[in-house]
Length: 171
Image (tube, rainbow, N blue to C red):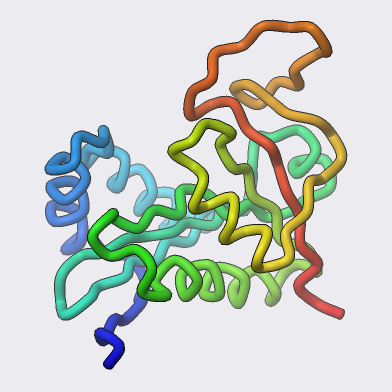
């Protein structure tokens, strides 16, 4: 039997549990990050959703309506950002449901959804999820901190080393 989970818009009541959940696994996602996301949501530049499994915080996703990645900014492509499902809650369909929620919001404003995915092994699950969902590289190469990496250039393999991907979400 599948566990019951639900996805809803992020609210200030979610912030302490979200920050504590990530802190408990050693990830740096302080309350201030989520406060910024809520402020951007209130300003209309970001949308945020949380997932709960059996009333326990399990993950979240955001859509940045004004991304800083140059190709998406130029083409006005909304960017799915910061899709995170806590390790104990993975492989239950939560990540897919969060992705579907983000795409459902994007399709009201755009024919295309974009996202950036990290290239180090910590992103293996996300890479597979996005490819399974039909995302393909945008053809612009890779970036480090929103700057295109040139051939032969050395960069740090961390959370800022990304491959950006696209998916047409409206026929």
